Length: 347
Image (cartoon, rainbow, N blue to C red; front, side):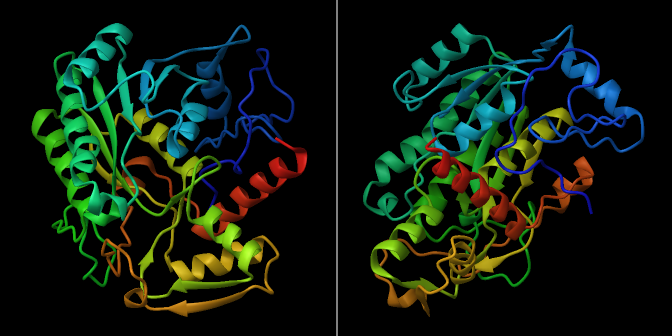
């Protein structure tokens, strides 16, 4: 099956009209150009003309991106800015827990689409900072939804696999009942309820186990610990789907292109335990000599409970888009090659 997205780190460059370097007649670009994968021969050039005109990229929509400096926000900005006019705001520009500031931002920017990539994502810290957690993950969603509803603006919001209790034995669908077992999951579910109650004009994306080129994440933590201690202990009784933020950003734009509405589960394909993921990280980093020991969740003293099984079915996404997310192993290999090359080049 064809890969849905170009390798991590592919650059989306402007080029003059006509065929660009590496572009085949079917519309596929090689190297550092956008990878177009038309379903039928000949569609690529027509699709290309919708992106470019006279050497200029056509800006389809004005997009307000909240949390653009974060790990996911960084890749969303990179994904959307070549086809859309994107205005990024972070905590320095807007307090999303303030309803008046959300209304003012929407009124000033006048976007057709608002993407909320902001969130309180430290799962353990949520247990001791519950008020802040609910303010950012729930009340802010209410503020954004209300501001956008009044102007009929589409909202994209991200939620989590942690809205499920983890007692299942098959991938969760969008229709399965939610039952969060920690404060983080409860706050995200409350945010979902606000969004669904206040507007029908939304795309709600549940995702899981995110990592990306910017910000703190599990990959970074494993590499730092492996290089500093030479030994790791990682839980082997929690199963989920590691997901690259670059792929999630591309999937988000695809849902926009398909005029999607409603709830969608979007993760890289397949599943593993945190222990399996850590082993993959060490293998890619050529740190195979580092000792890694599997342990049970109960052996860790963590403030928040975690679901034992939080794999989600992406069939609804596949049915709508006709595309599948690439396997998590392949997505991670692409990602690691990118961050390794960036480190070597001093970027």
